[in-house]
Length: 477
Image 1: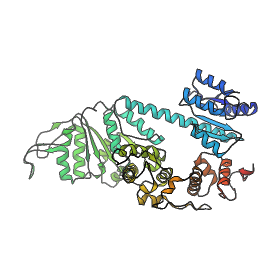
Image 2: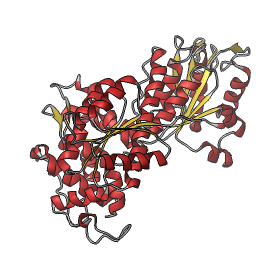
Image 3: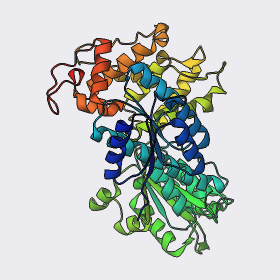
Image 4: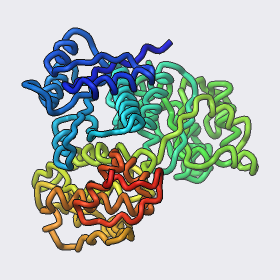
């Protein structure tokens, strides 16, 4: 049985504290409560806890002090701040100081339980991500893989598990998702890491040339064969052969590849004797191989030989949590080639990256960042440094009650927006994406509906009649 999550509730208001404890205990959590911040800090110094919910305004040791101390003594513990004096400024300050979330009193039991579960899930994913990345790091190989989303965590798990074996691996995913990086990670963390990793693009050459490349040829095998040539299988002997775009392989070569996988030996073009090889195969495709099998364009027996371990790589649009991390990764990669140091991104730039659909996935993002670094004239990447097609696609004016201003191509003053204006525009864009649905908008922003209405009122945005949920306008609660 999985142990209960340990939660500390800190509030000098006894009634509020007891209500929170009761609600969380009913959800199955192990809860301890304290009337002062100092008592909670002392408890955290003794034993680890999974989550801390603390009021901000208390005695000598307030919630921000509790937050700072837990960041020091228990850096992996998520902190949720509570306050009866809710404001946008308070939420911003809480997040800025490292709180996972911020709740304004009075709050509903369901709202608290949702934030608690989300906080615990977030902390668990970070721990698992760290553990699996450390497992790869311990094998002294940098994989080049970047991301901490749940989808990428699953990829890290599979890489860590299959690397030590000999099984054939089939990598599936759209173009630009990083299939070769994953193949290199598997090889680099395997017992074969000191032997060659040999990539070959099966769609880059016609079958006749590809056969010679893969299996080699004997002297005189065809016109121009002036000597013996070792193929890629022999070059990769003892290591890993990466067959990219395996779905493009012709029928004749499919038969020969199947024979190599069965017998672990190859025959050079024009040769009469076989050569033993010890090669681990990793294949990759952006096509639907089962459909190709049904259509008779890919051998079923070869598909089953390749499909021993299947790893599906997510497209970038399904791992948007990783966008900022990837963007900074590529910024560091290319800033050394720029004429001046580029240290970061304007907020509007990151907002544009987040709004774009990325049909070319991580490869398209890398190209966009390389271009932006080359064109940037200052310490930060501005929106106009991004490709025009990206800006044009991402910048569709919101249709919810009022339109957000569109960035002008040469208006560098957009970088000088106030934090309030950035928040207003982001709220409008989320409302637009959610088609005005206030429940979904609040969920995406990670706030409750009352806070959403307060934000809208502050920015002068009319949310219209509230016909969702109970039908009550939270601003009147």
